[in-house]
Length: 578
Image 1 (cartoon, helix red, strand yellow):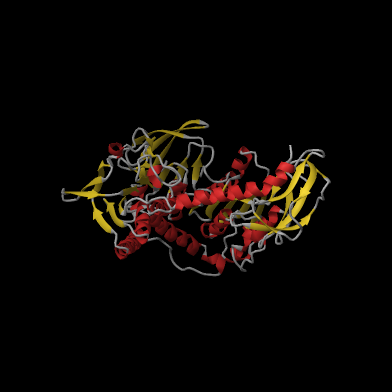
Image 2: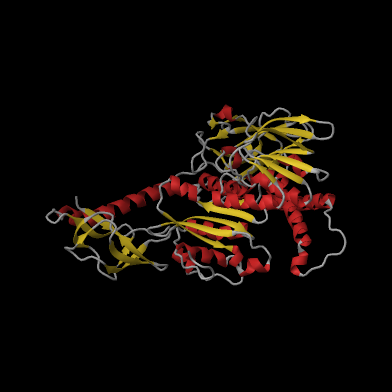
C-alpha cells in the first residue's frame, strides 16, 4: 500500500525543515532503514530513514525547499500501484488536519474560565506558588495554612536538611585541608547548637520572604485548619477555636505529606524519630540506625556520619536510592561505605527494643537474624499524602490509596477542585509541587496547560552529589529501546581535580537512531546544579549534536557534560575511548 512520507518533527521547537539532499530518486527502490533524504534546521542536520519499503513514486519537494513539519515530501509505493488519490489528497489532507488542529486549539484557549475567587489550602512550595501565579493572572486568592508558610520544604524538609548538610560537609573539607596545603592547628569540631541556630535563621528568612511575596501579590492569608463543607464553601478553624466561612469558585488542595511510619514493633519508643524529629535533635547521637535507604535516609546518613556519628542504613531492597540509575546507585553506595557508613541491603526490620542504655534493632538479613545496638533510630521509609480531616469526601473527590486522583491539568473529578504536590502522590518533590501549582493556577484562569513529568530532575545532596533526569539504563532495557551510553569520569575533569572532588561520573543515555537524549545521570560535585542543563535538553528533545556544539566554559565541572555526550559516539577528547 502506497504511503506518504512527511517532513519529520525532530524536536519540540521545530516547525519546519530544509530538505537538503535527496538520497533516492523517483523510480528508485528503497528499503526500510535506508537514508531517504537529509533535512536541516537552524540547529542540526539529520538523515531521515525510510520507515517503509517500495519504489519512490513521487518526490513532492525539491532540494532546498523549506517544508513545514508533517507536510508531505514524497510518496512510496508499489511499482504499478495507483497513487492518484494520494497525489490529489496529500495537500488537502494536510490543510484539513491543520485547520482541525487550529479550531481545536482556539476552542481550548477560548474555554470559559471559572470564577476568580480562589482558595488555596496549604502554603508550601506548591500552594504559595499557585497562589502567587493565580493572583498574577487576576484571581482573588485566599491561602489557608495551619502551621508555617513554606510547608515541609522550608520548615522541616529541603531547606533545614541542606543547612545541616552544608555545615557537615564543610567540616569534612576543613579536615581534609592538608591535602590542599592548609595546616589546621588544634582540634576541629562542630558546634551542633550553633548549627541548629543558623538553621532557624535561614528558615525564618525564607518564610518571611514567602510572606512578603504573598502580601505584595495581595493574597489573603488565613491561619487555621481547612475543611470542605460543600463544593463552594470551606470552614476554617483558627487557633482560638473560632470558625471562619470562606466561599470560593475554585479551590486548590496543596496539603502536602507527612512521614510514613511502618507498623514495626517499638516504633513509638522515645529514641525512635522521623525526619522531622531528627532535624531538631539537641545533640549528635553516638550512633544512629536509619531504616530506609532512599533520599531522606541517605542524606541524613551523610550528615551524621560527617559529624562523628556511627551510622547504619537498613534497606529492604537489594540497592539504595531505588529511583536512581543502578550504576550510579552502586557508586554512591561504595562511597558511603568507604566513608564509614554500614549499609545492609535485602534486610527487614522486625522490631525495636529498649535496652539499658541503647535501643536494639532486630533485623532479618541474608545471613539470618541479627541485632544492632544504637542510641537513636530514624525511620525514613517515605512519606504519605496529608489529606485526613480535609473533608474531600464531602465534595466527592476521588482518592486512591490515600492520594487525591488528578489528571495532567491537576483537575480532580470534582469540577473546580484541583490538587497539587505531595497530596496527589504523583512525584513527591518540592519543584514538582511548584510546577503543578503553576499548571493548576493557569488552568483555573482560562489557560490550557498540562504537566510534563518527563523532565523532572531528582537530586540527592550527598558528597559527592547525585542527580538524574529522564530514563535510567534499566528502564531503557525494560522498554526495549535501542540505546547508546556515554560516560565521562570526573577524575579527568580539571575543575574536579582542582576542588579535590574527583569521584564521580556523568552518564548520558540516547536512542541509537537519532541520538536524542533520553536520560542523564550524574555523580559528582555540583551535580544538582548541572542537572538543569540535562533537564532542558530533554525538554527541547535535544540530540547529542546540540550538547556537543554548545560551547561549555572552562574550567568547569559542566564541560564534562559535553565530554560525556562525545563519549556516546566514542569521540571524547579528554579520555581514552573504549
